[in-house]
Image 1: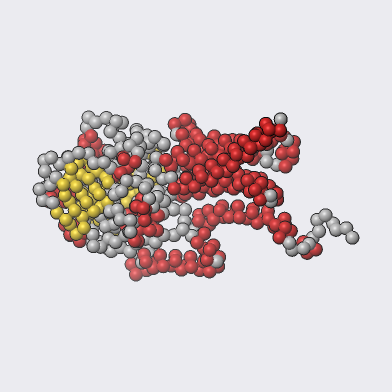
Image 2: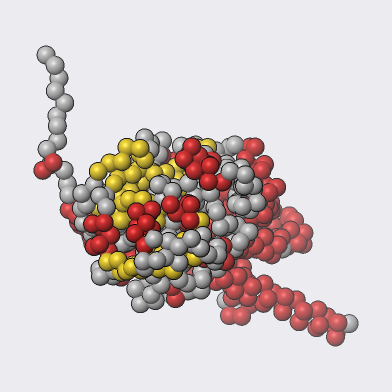
Length: 320
Length: 219
């Protein structure tokens, strides 16, 4: 007789909001036992924001077959200084961000400047799911199933002029919604940029969701960029303006410390960060847990086949 | 009738002094160990963030600095308040500083670097903040070893000299923290510790110069 593996009907799977409610209840119970003060000393939970499901089609060309970082980790460990410098701050404080209505203006050296509503962007193109590696300049990495489509689709609509050489992304900087903007830690608004050919590269994703749903606020809702062959900070979050410009944009991290954060910031194990080696990285959510060794960092984060030609003839040690 | 030197508690008066003498040390010990219990609690409950090694490293490092500050607060507090009992707590706080520094160092050595000595060697001579932190930790070791009462007595004046290394350690450690945060422009927390340690060191410099002055005047 053949053993039949039990299949779990979807009705048996705990929905996400119930799952979080349960944890909340457990913590509440713990709070009762320990006293309220103690319970806050012993918990550091932040709750993921509610998101809407999106209908998406997997783009198998751009799917990395590596273990994906859990939704929990992707949404609770973020660098998003607009909400604070601690990795847990975005999940704790991004709920104050108002993502609807949201407008994004595409302007500058274009013949058809246009302001898009976030709803327009969600309908503009069929949404693809792409599983990308995400390598942070700090030496850790994740594997994330993003939802979106190539930025080039949007750029073509506004018809860039011949004089446009770079694309500048401007993030929202509203002190009322983003508590971190009150601190002088970075030059606000957060500005990032790409060379025009990088922006047109099919890998450059105009990102509207992750894990099949709209972007959680702590991950840069409602719209962000993802350039998987560059360090994470190059991927601007909560974008309100995309400008096509002639000169290389003055980007926030480059302004803050140009020796450490170059304009290109392509993932490159051969170019050390002044304070640490970039040769290896810690993959978060590794099966081996605590004792998982670091893994070797790949040049262009493993996307060399697709993007190396963009930098032919360039000295990547100089243009880091 | 003559009372025994150490009478059982029920025979003593419940004065604040007696209570502190009796329960002060266990109480401070429990308070000092509670961050570690908190860390273990986080571990058990899967709350060490997506990057547990980084979390543990920062957690233990921060508490090592906190205990360094607390240790250095004892003398100014004792001198200004005249509450001499405080000196009894200095050793324990100092040893907790070493304890958290040891956990911080071990996390880096075993979990982060996984005993990869070529990477460690690279780190040591290339990364200023690693060099500074490691130097601070190494200098703490002799202080922890000679912290016992008997060695304190045996070493006499040289004990005090040896233990004044703590001021150098404080400077190394704060630089270690500062350099780590500097390039990220993220000074919020570092500044707090710079102010606290700066004030504690300034108080001592002030006291030394007043003493020197007094000595010169009497001579």
